Length: 190
Ligand SMILES: *[C@@H]1O[C@H](CO)[C@@H](O)[C@H](O)[C@H]1NC(C)=O
Ligand SMILES: *[C@@H]1O[C@H](CO)[C@@H](O)[C@H](O)[C@H]1NC(C)=O
Ligand SMILES: *[C@@H]1O[C@H](CO)[C@@H](O)[C@H](O)[C@H]1NC(C)=O
Ligand SMILES: *[C@@H]1O[C@H](CO)[C@@H](O)[C@H](O)[C@H]1NC(C)=O
Image (cartoon, rainbow, N blue to C red; front, side):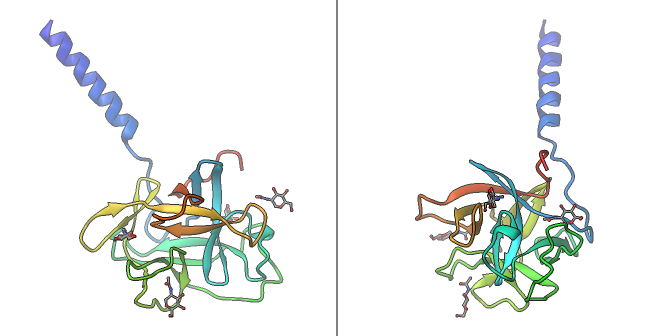
């Protein structure tokens, strides 16, 4: 009887453990894209416009610099930076893009910043944090210097185009912001 209970419990443990085993994160030096998932946001890809991070279809953006991006990381440690580049092989590449750039770091606003907007920079100001990005499986998290891990990502409808959202960090004071998770996995319907 006891043996049955134990093996049943073991089975449960094994089953639930395997249910939680995260799928593999993109490898170091492997190019990946990031997608936002949340209530009414079913895997919209991150794009660049005017130095800021948005999600949605870049071709719907009113910005002339809107372009899809892909990322690479040089190591899996939280001190490594995530480097963005225009995803030029993408079919939605904006050919009359006026703002050519390469190798910009993804940042979240530092706690000293009054902004919530995430973005891309070549040279981070003290109000922009470019380290701490880590994967848990295919989920993006932020590890702070004190070792806390959080994933306080949000999106908010932007006036810069239909279905275009600003990508935000740590929004505590705005009911119109939608909490999202950022993942490297592409939505299955696209
Ligand atoms: C980047 O380009 C690759 C190859 O064309 C494509 O599979 C991927 O969906 C693109 N990512 C984004 C975010 O557009
Ligand atoms: C950081 O400061 C610069 C200069 O004041 C400003 O232009 C930029 O928007 C700020 N970034 C954030 C994330 O607060
Ligand atoms: C892009 O805009 C068109 C109309 O201008 C709209 O029908 C479409 O849903 C938008 N795309 C996204 C991804 O929201
Ligand atoms: C989030 O914002 C609050 C203030 O609104 C700040 O105290 C906290 O440190 C921030 N957390 C992160 C992880 O940035």
